[in-house]
Image (cartoon, rainbow, N blue to C red; front, side, top):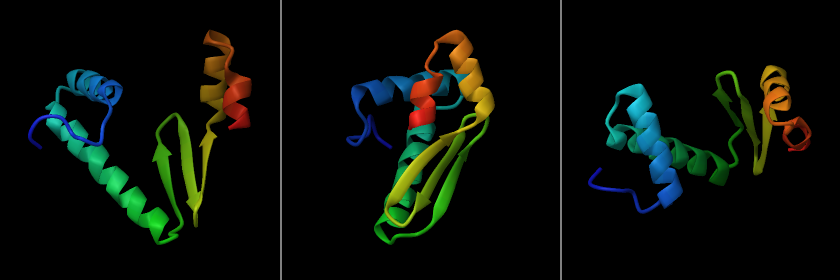
Length: 93
């Protein structure tokens, strides 16, 4: 990847830079992985594939046909409730 991706916002670019710093990986590698994941997701959704993305310690993005739902793990919701009182919002999503 040369430079910033046209598909990512400035905020996304900052997140990628922070992730790259924390993981000690080049930012271009992080962006490439995210873009590849998005392409797979776009293909799967457009062809109405059923698939799940599992985010360790966070939850599961469940995709069935053209329906997409995020299911958060209870431990995360409890942690968020203790620190930020946002559990109800997460559970309603």
